[in-house]
Image (tube, rainbow, N blue to C red; front, side):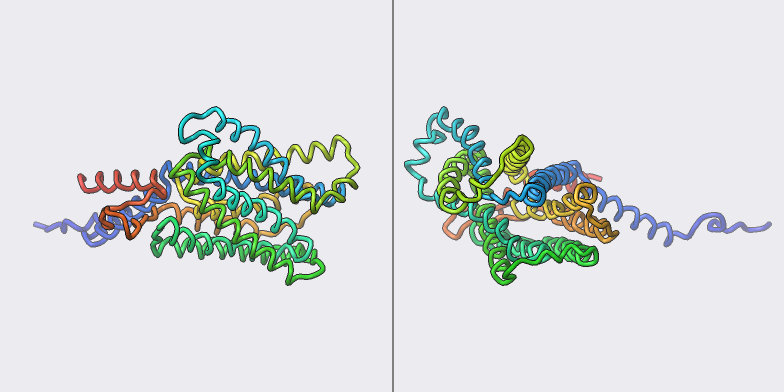
Length: 373
């Protein structure tokens, strides 16, 4: 009788085990990187990028086609919209959320916050007059490590190795985008003093980091309306004073017509949406992840510029977008932890931070399900 080997028609058990391990690993990676909350965070981040793209396109139209350069006026209109919307809401609140109660206890803190926010916007826009687009894109990323350092000491955020790798991947994507700009010839718009422009960018990026850390603290510990209302109130006052001191001649030289007015309105709407939606995204993630997500704003501006301003296209732009998104997904895939302050009575080992809270809850549910299986 001929003996038939049981393995003649089937792969060996070692091969089946290897394939099963690889399949399980792929399922775990897919379940960790492509959850509903991560996809929602990506979508919200790209919505913010589109708002920033709208502000960039309208500002460029004003500067190039109509020779209008009034960044403080543009910011002033946005702060006025915040004032009329969110500050008025605080007037009708009761208790500790009331405008007068907040002003009595924390007025000087919000003056500093408003000053940081106003000057960050002004310095970045003013830097374009002195340095190149390439320098602004590169040096503006300086705000991300500053933001992470401030979050570490002020918000007690504790990052893991994967977060630093994700930030490095995102910065690599920015470097790819800058390289594409150089190859496309977009770096030729150099101003009068590059050193001054670079210093302005670094200062503006640092002030953005300060504003974002304060925003994360306020929207998570207090309320979104309080942050927007106070920024609207003091931003309007500070930008209005600076507008009268710095840009009154530029505003007087504007030849107003309906097209220029429409561009100012479009800029204000995009900026108002950016300020209104960013706290919502920060509530479920963190200021650092939001800043990583909006690195794609320059790429959206480029894609619109292909049709509006005749920019040259390069395949490196697609590669840059892909790299930035990979880094952003990696950062969001693992929630950060928040250490308790030294004077807190809560044991440190049991303190899980509120950064990426939705992601942490989903991760715990997945781990429980895997344990049951």
